[in-house]
Image (cartoon, rainbow, N blue to C red; front, top):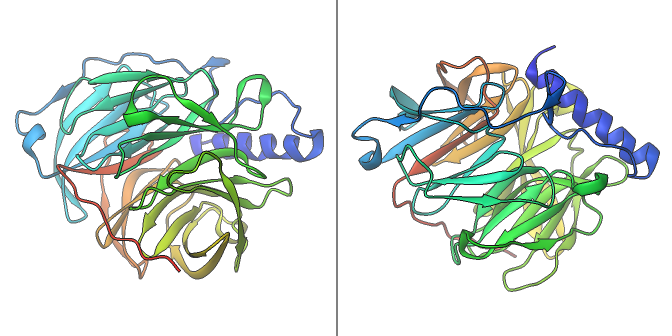
Length: 335
């Protein structure tokens, strides 16, 4: 069984337990068990970065959870030229980037913060409220949001907000969203998180800028079989379906938001993509990490046409982000 199949099987078994057991079952979580025990942060060699990594305009961070490593490549316009470094001593679950290019790596229990091109973290944040999965940084405030795919004692998960990406987090729950796994901010500071409802359909929640509570968002226009990562790209919220039409390929849905409603206005199938765990839109390129396929597949946006393949030196990939040094924000228009 491949890593992707293993993780998908855990996800489906876990969701089935939520539906059939009323959310009271004992959870194993995405990739929470390996070789009969918990995944741990196991060092593999030493982290290193090339001399020019810190000043490189763009870097591609490709995470391999099973081998406890993040490879960092020199990146430009959907292509890489060389391996610029590796980050070891962590078991990466997911990644996100702030507007200055710092990369945040979640590990299930902690969040490591690496300045652009740095071999060592500038800080490590702790999560005692669940199993950390996706994360996002507010471009306005610098607040860090972390989605916990499940909480202590098999609870339905939560979202943590670390003010200015520091200190102790604020714990929030999302109405009607089971086990939020990924989250993302828009350019005006609104936070979105995805998960499942009680019928195992895509469920979305929004934490409006300045609000203290999540509100539920009704989704219409398509059935998302296995929602994974999401990202804002004005004027749409992009959501990855890693089991498009029930198959082992992925598609990205463009969701148009209006009040408490999200409508799928376009579907972008990604051919030969297998099951994408995380995508990252950078300009008119979408880079993807799918655990059944080690290399990074790159697509054009919004056509979804294959652009190229970035070879990955690790046997699998489950998360990918592009860090643009001193990257700027985007402009959001919302009805």
